[in-house]
Length: 50
Image (cartoon, rainbow, N blue to C red):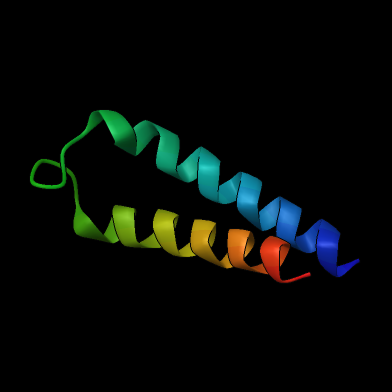
């Protein structure tokens, strides 16, 4: 069950990060980047740790 949760979090992180790739950090909000990358890091860390 934990592995499924990490997969879901990772997919959400990727979906949040993809639209931000076309926007530079100066034009976009830093908050959007921090949330997307934070979720992505948590998901990937969980997947690699298991």
